[in-house]
Each structure stands twice: as structure tokens, then as C-alpha cells.
Image (cartoon, rainbow, N blue to C red):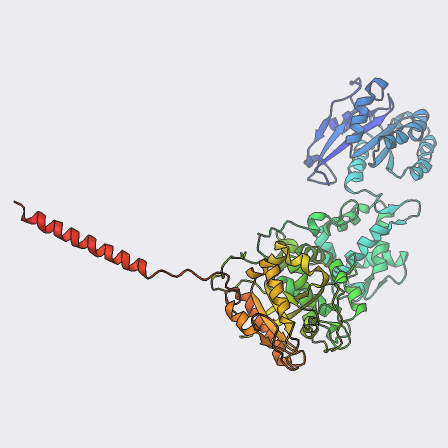
Length: 632
């Protein structure tokens, strides 16, 4: 919402627009005032609906010569108070004024005000004037409400301006369909999400404690037992079965807010919606979904302990059958308050990207690994889903409390200095010749069975899991097989900067396999900046001499790296050793980065020259001092 509500009064000449403004400001009727008043600003302490808004009241003229000024003010309005006073001016509302607003492209709430009701002696005639507005209100949905007033008698003057304030701050149009007499679908969807988030035990009911927590959160006051009973009684009358001893069902919660709308108490519904960060369009605000979160260059983003705890609690809450895995039904229930499962998950064919049990259900370890990867690759997606799923951080931090930023790390042209990288999530590109066993490595990383049938990887594949390192410390490793995108990725320095370690694989039983790595490193020199681990796969088969200028052991030795690790997809121990070695290389890049240039060693000649020079200087100085002392 804007911090300034701009109210523009419109209507034909003589209907009493200026008198209404004067009576509102001075709280008394002032005769013989000027035809058009200058704009008036009402400070927040005098606004009855909200205490943080300023109201600007703008008077207008309907004379043809003032039409340009009228158009300008109408376009700047947040709400229009359309005033009429007799049968003629009331007929002009649907015939001229409302179509005129639309012709200007204005889409703001309009409040109709039947002024000078003190001149209508017959009460029935006054009611007829208002009744005539009902079909007009049904045709023009921008009409928020209608009220009778008298500036002279101070009748409903304050109420008319109050309705204008309310129309801006708590508009009924986004919530309620007056023709259908029901809440609109976006309002229902928003309330369903709020019910979902408030139903902490996910039993389908808001019990007294959950209702009281909602009341405290939204209105900063609690409900007493009488209030609870009264609310249930109102809901029970509207929808039998929606209020029981267990609490209020989702249908009952929707019915309660429908009653608020019907009775003109929709500010209560807006109080709930705004507490949960909904805008006037009933979408979550961008500031809530994507708060400011600065990430320095060469830094990465990970889940904080609070973030991991939130996702653990979410997993345990929705694992209804307590089998240690989330099946498709449970996942759908979990993601109910969100638009859908993250698009990046769908694109990478989740849940094949993470650890699942034998039934194919995502385990807690796989669940946390998936979110660790999502946060590492695109922290904005994680922030949005934390908001949708109801993460509650501190008042200052909000959803950003669930994330943390790692220290920056830079690539060097020479081997990095010794030291660990302050990260717990690492990215690894798995490179190698076709049919070298890359896909088998990803499958076995997720504890999936080994399939000997070769199927070439066209689309990129990804797998994420935790790795337990020596000493018991755990980290998350993201293995990526690039597929047809390999040339584009390896030629892109930005993409390579996102990678922490390269796993070079070759088929030790195929004599032509290792040469592919040599050619790859020669073609893409940027790879030299990254830590690397070499793996001789299919070690359970007969080892073959490689047709290459250098054999793998000599090649890695020249790079200052460990010899290739012999691995087989059927040897569990060798696989574990490979994953640990990849994690250690990523965490300690100085131990696994190729030596590109020999380190400069200090020449032995230079110290000798310096030493000789120093001796000569000392001898000369002593000689001079001796000579000086003998002179008379």
C-alpha cells in the first residue's frame, strides 16, 4: 500500500462536494464557501482506519473548461468519492461519470455519496434513491459502497470519508463477488494457504490454541473461551460440520471470512491476509518472497542450522505413515501452499536426483540434500519456498535467517595456498569419454543398483547426496554429468567458477579412453584452474595399456596430483573412497589443483653475491675508521 491515500471528490456542479470537505475538516457546516477548494492533507493521527497513512483530499470542478485538470486528478486518485444530490445527478452517474472514469483507464474504488439528504423530506424517497443504485453497483464493479449524507446537518460526513479510506486500505472487490455472493477464488486460495500454515499439527482443523495463535499473530490480542464458542457458533450456523470439538475445518475458516465480507467486516479478513504478506492483488509481496540478500562474488549460499531444522521438521510433519520417506501424496500435501514443486526440480527429474528408499520415496537425507543443492544453485528459489511454506525467522531477518553466505574463494593461476574452504556444499563436474562409467558413478552415489547396459547421456544429469569425511564431518556433494551441454559449460568461465572440483574418469579396460581426458584438458585450458581427481573406472575388468603419450600415473604425477583411483561400480569401498577424495579435494583445493608453472626457486648465486658485497662493505668501513684514527 502507498503511504498516501489520495481521495478525489467528483460530481456535477452544486451537489455539495466542497461543503462535504469543509464539514469534514471543520466539523461544522460553513455556508458560502468557494466553489473549488485547494487540496487538503490529513495527517495519520486523524485517519480512523490506519495510523500510518496520510490522506490527501482533492476537490474538483465539472465545468468543461476545467476538464483537463479534472482528468489529471482522476488519474492520480486512489479512491473517488462520487457525489450526487437529486434524481438528475443520480442518473448522470451510470450515464456519464462511471463510463467517463473507465474511458480514462482508471481502475480505483468508487464510493457513491447521496448528499443533501436533509432536503429530502420523505424518507421513502431517500431509500428509493439508494435502491436505484443497486443495479448500478452490480453493473459497475468498481463501486465499493453507497452512503447517504448531509453536509449541512453533519449527517454521515465522517462515515463517507471513512468508507473512502476503507475502500483503499481494505478493498472488498478483490475478496468478494457481489453477484455470486461468495469469496473470489484468489481470496479462497490465500485463506486456504493461511489455514494450512496455521494448522501446525496438520490434522485438518484449527483447534483453540491454533486459533488463538492466529488471533495473536494478526491482531495482537488473544481469544477468551467465550470468543472461541461464539466463533464456532457462527460457523456452525453457516456450515454445519465445519465447527466441531476438534476445531474449525478449512471449510469453516473460509465460511467465517465469507460472513465477514457479507457483514462489511472484511477489514478483519484483510488483517489476516496482510499479516501473511498478501498484497491488494492477493499475491504474496515480492519483498517477502525475495528479500534483499547480498552474496559477494565467489561466495556461495547454504542453509543455516535454522534452515536445516525447518526442513527436518517439515519432513517429519508430512511423513504421515512414518516410513522414513515422502511418497508422492505426502509431497503433494507438503507443497500444497506453494504454486508447485520448484521448476528446477521438475527439470532435473526429481526425485531421481537424490536419495530414495527402496519404494522410491525421498528419505530425510535425500530431502535435505535436495534443498542443499537448490540453495547452492539458486538461493532465491529457496527463499521463495521458505516464504510459501511458512518459515518464521526473526522480525529483522525473516526468511534470510534460514540461509548463510560462505567466505569468498578465488581461483588462482598457480596452486592455491594451503587451507580449507569454508563450505559444506560442493559442486563436481564428472568428465570423461563416452562409456567410461560416468552415469554409473552418479547412480551408485545415490545407492542405486548398477546396470551394465550402456545408455549414452544426452540431457545433463545431476545427483546430490551427503558424504561423510574422515573425522565424521559431513558435507553435501553435487555430481553433474553435463551431457550435450559439456562444450558450452567447459568454455564458460562463469560456469566453471561454480564448480569446486573435477572428476576425470576413464575406462581402465579401454585403451583409448584416457586420451579423451588429455584432449579435453588441452582443448579447455580453463580446467587447469580447478582441483581434480582422476578415477580409473571399471577396475573389476582387465586393465589395458592406454594409447596415450603418457600413461595415467605419469600424467597425474607431472601435474602434481595423486595417481588415478581404481574404482568399480561393483566395489562399494572404492566408490566411498572416491566420493571422500572428491570432497577432500573440494575442501582442500591446494592438495588437488594441478601445478601449472614450476614455483620460482631462489637462485643460489644471488645470496653469494649479496654476502660478498656485505663483506666488502664491512672491510672498507673498518679500513676507513682505522685510517681516520691515525690521523693527527
